[in-house]
Image 1: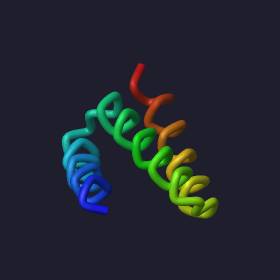
Image 2: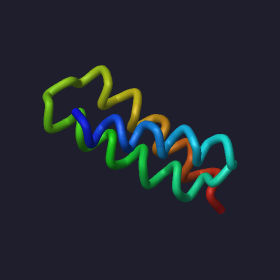
Image 3: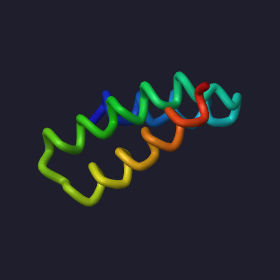
Image 4: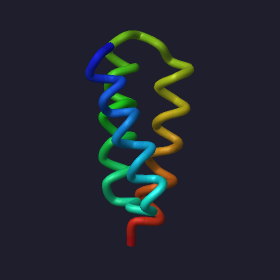
Length: 58
């Protein structure tokens, strides 16, 4: 859970800075974290955020 909190903090900073490439990377890591924990709802939410940032990272 400590790693998740670290990723979440970094994710929020990257969003604030409008760094979509970094936000996408972090959202992907968080998505994988929730997949490993078996939480489908959180996994789906973060997968959506990953795709959203990836599209904006162009």
